[in-house]
Image (cartoon, rainbow, N blue to C red; front, side, top):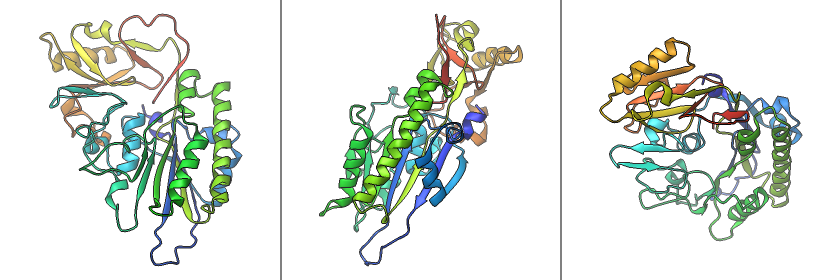
Length: 340
């Protein structure tokens, strides 16, 4: 997972203008392009993003949080907290106290332990909006973002931008901070891999969308009034089709339950087996050359900022970069990508 940990793109174009009136508040638009590996900027043609970087400020990369998944990293961007603190430990997970599992459609506040930055300055002419950003449609302590549109892949990016602009320009209750999400190039990257023609086409399409967004902001009179931040949640790594680790072959299919998605699983022993037994077998496999790492919950590295939450289960299992965890025979496969 090492190189996948260095895969966030951050670009900032800030226009520091106006705010002369005493009742004005700073305007911020944060836009996330899911799965936009920072090296796409050098691999593919992205003139609109490059223009923003040239006029504003660009970070070469950001180090995302562990695990490198969409929901945890977007919630970290929204809260400023590590996963062990905000509680969203994966795109799917299990909570022993609730005895329930979580998936991407879950908006039950019990899973979302900490309110977002978007809510903390609400009131006093400060209002926030969430445009399909993970977690923004959740109610925190009887409150939520002022304007919210839950994720709907049928709504294209241009419509999302137009809606956000209307939120900023609302005459009665304008927002001053919006988090805007787009699912590409992640969806294409998982299907075809980061070096594919399809991803090249999609990255260049995303760049065109950025150009359209900037023109729309300018036409609305917002471009010189707001700060625009482009980010991503994680990057991409190629996984050859043969690079799979059948965990059932190591542990036995009836010895454990797994939660999460490859390349990181949380394991819980079952059928009379123990966490120590599972860990011992996985450690032996690693010593014999299987490309994985396993930790008992108490031994999860501190730098992961992951162990301090009950949703980190008995055994944490990682596949090395370029490998995928599976259960049983995968059948015929094309090249895959992970780190989503």
